Length: 398
Image (tube, rainbow, N blue to C red; front, side, top):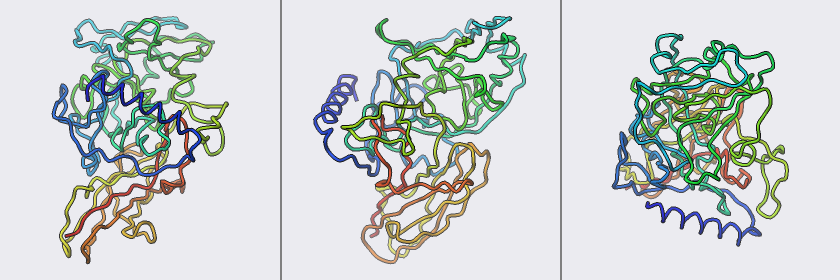
């Protein structure tokens, strides 16, 4: 998709939303994008392209039949179109400044040699993943199910970096910024803030992804990893950490990535919520990687369904499968849990006994007893955030 086509689509979507605000809000299954781009991006296979500037690439459904997402099939989400096209790694520095007694300017080698190295397997998911399920159309990229992935990350604890900077006693917040920039100076930079109590031992500054340097389009050379939380705070090309004693008002904290602050986290198109809160931790979710809607299955043949499930770190207790549109459910076999923050693979075997279409559904339940709802039970919000409906795939048996 060309940049001009992307903006045309955005304008059409916005016009549709405004002109249809009186329509009853409803939620269905996310859009299935069948067409893979014929153009590849650096270090990536052909993916579903929503935009080329900034790069917005979605992972196809069939990739989610395995628990680790390969680097070259991992989704890409940038907010700013001006992304450095080259980096001199020998001179790259991450600055730690503000309310600190010992300001830092750290190289990649400093991080590798002077801090304890840690590894963590965790899911990264855009807060707007599956946004295309909402109607009327909400603002933002109309993702299908593929704005997510799971990788093994390696780096150093953010807490250790902050400790070596010797924070002042009244320090309370940290602001994080990367090297991507807006086209116009009037546009805000993509800066995220965390309160110090949110910086736990498993929050890391990563330089490796699945045993390799971070791919360029996934934030090379450094990105923040906050397991269990949506990826809006996983800052890419991380270059600056500013410590402060007070919260600073920021567009990407106070306007974007927010949902209604009520029990259902919902609103209607003609009655938007005046009170909002930021999206933070992910909810329980599953997706079927195989078979897909393109699959042709022979009658009386054994079919082994495969998929992945995850949540915010509570851990997956069970995945249930339905072959009759949710009327009855059977337990899938769960794979090993590599991390409570990682994809939990599942599989389920069945033999179709009749020709025609079969709708397969998957429903994940975590250790807290939280379960995916039916898509129609999810209520609308203007940003199209936090969709986690029961996944559904319709196959053809021949």
